[in-house]
Length: 499
Image (cartoon, rainbow, N blue to C red):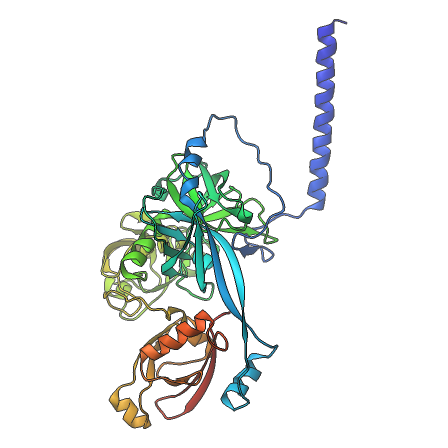
């Protein structure tokens, strides 16, 4: 046998053994593992949580150069350190604390303890504006930003939006490197992207992946708030603790998303990460910079995603679109003529086959903007023009407030109401929305007279107490509220500001 034939036989033998071992290992892994279901109850959602390994993913043999995209991004991605002074208090239930406060068993001294969190941010302007996740800086007493060149700055919070999990910071610096905004609408499934951030405090870390899906809704942002907006870009780029708020960029180095979350059975990174698309980011950040709060447009409908079961139940032929389950009174949808049972299929010519896409489209607009709605009523396709409104049912600009998390519209009690209740001062809760007041059981019409021993005469008094609590300067982040309802009934509430 020639030397060439011997070598060829040896290679075939090695290949056969390798294939056999691979098949055996794969079979063993299948026997020991359980299938993963994104819709299963065992799957948990987490913000950029820890991982112990990064899976090795086989890639096609294509010539893709990430060096320029990485080089143009890393210097504009910063590390964010948030410090929150938490009150360290003796073990005591909320009920015990409630009765001790209201029924005179005295106050206790509490020693504030610092809690430090780490995340990332993206510089979007040369004069120091930085976008990050709300959960990175939420309730922080101090925010420190460290640039890639090791310079550190204390940041000012311009505004934040829990509903989209975005926040805007500002540092006092000039001529900073920035990441240019790209168009997330043009991003395609299968396209290469880079995740840039500071996982495990390892600065300027770049990982690569492809876009696995778009307009993904996980139900993780503001889960108790029906207004939560989610339309994530799903990728398989590795994201770990510290990546939250970092950049997702395309191969041109353009910002297409803000890295926010992972999704896995264990809470550890297992191959999927999620980013907020720039179609949402750009609008939210512009609002925060200009108004201090997001100008959120409302269509005024309760909606459900069309599927086979719903279509059969409602006797609808369509299988794609968004089913209108309810139309709110005096809403933009009602004025446009929408009715329960309609199926919305497009907004301004953009198809809306899912709830996530519909929410993303509405999130691009402000109250007062006019949109064209395409929908089916039975078998008839219709169109209607609608002027979007805010949550108060008008088109006025919403003013920024530091007490939005309370979920209530407040105003000073009228002279008529004060005379009726024989009180001086007081703040009336005119409308309870989703938030801490609703969770505590406070209802419309309640008049706040006292918070944590402080007499309340006007809305500024409420804001002052709230801000002091969030800074950790008082006994705890809990509002103990005394007041009256219009019928004269006294009520007492404990409102925790931290879930």
